[in-house]
Amino acid sequence: MEILIGLLIIAIGSLGQSSSYVPIKKVRNWSWECFWLVQGIFAWIIFPLIGAYMGKPHGMGLFELFSYGKFYMPLIFGILWGVGGLTFGLSMRYLGVALGQSIALGTCSAFGTLLPALFAGTNIFRGDGLILLLGVCITIAGISIIGYAGSLRSKNMTEEQKREAIKDYALTKGLLVALLAGVMSSCFAFGLEAGADIKQAALFADVDPLFAGLPVILLVTFGGFLTNAAYCLMQNYKNRTFAQYCNVSGKDFINNILFCALAGLLWYSQFFGLEVGKSFLTGSPVLLAFSWCILMSLNILFSNVWGIVLKEWKNSSRKSIIVLILGLLVLLFSVFFPSLV
Image 1 (cartoon, helix red, strand yellow):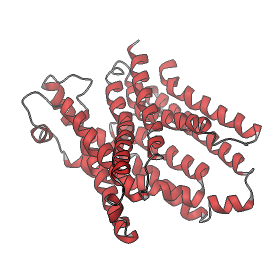
Image 2 (image 1 turned 90 degrees about the horizontal axis):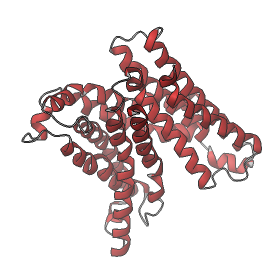
Image 3 (image 1 turned 60 degrees about the horizontal axis):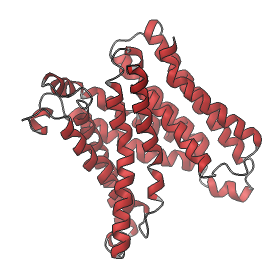
Image 4 (image 1 turned 45 degrees about the vertical axis):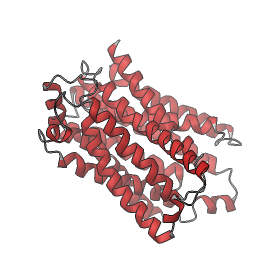
């Protein structure tokens, strides 16, 4: 029963993340770099800071808690994770959404799940390690099937639409960027592992196990914020969009702040849910190690469900829809696979 509760909590957080791009569409008269920076302040600083205080021992400051571990390691991995987020968009620019997303997210799932297990000394070719490896393979298979469905959908596009969608198509460059995006994005998982001593210190100080890992998330997201903020400010300078922050009407400014805050809250919910959900999976070491892959699978699953709801697959062929549904079912199966064997 506890395992189901843990998976449900992770799923709720994943649903929040998959919904976080909907409020962004309501932002008015701000360029990409403006709304991305503002929602990032909420997603990577404000809400993680609130969560960190929930996981802070009573009578102990956050800096004091961070001193119990190598706090700079989660921060460094967060900076690298921020690079992954920025290059993720480039992978889709060079390869298209279907292929670029499949390679980047598949790499992120595999590296973020298997490498921490390997560093912990797990043999992935026998016992629980083999189950972990098979689960990752099933996840990658599901992502690949969804990527294939995306390629089938593109066949219904006109040549002009294809050039518009992938006008900078470059296979070799795209593959390298997609692999880089996947590896760097998986650094979030490494950051959580690197902060294990801080989490243990919180647990030793009788912090509720549900929230003990939240201070580590703040370190990782703050690192990611540094990377993204630097890029956004560079784009503000390059595109001369600094004035946009203040040159919107009072009504639009309030509207933009509220929807950026909502987007940030929904985005943060995935990692809040991951840490809280993991506390219910301690009875299953395999599921605990597989939790990162579960989150990635559910993110992709719910994102594609949103795509269907928002009619992004409208006018697609029957074959592409069937392949998409098959891929989603494989991803759903991958979530429960480790608990079935």
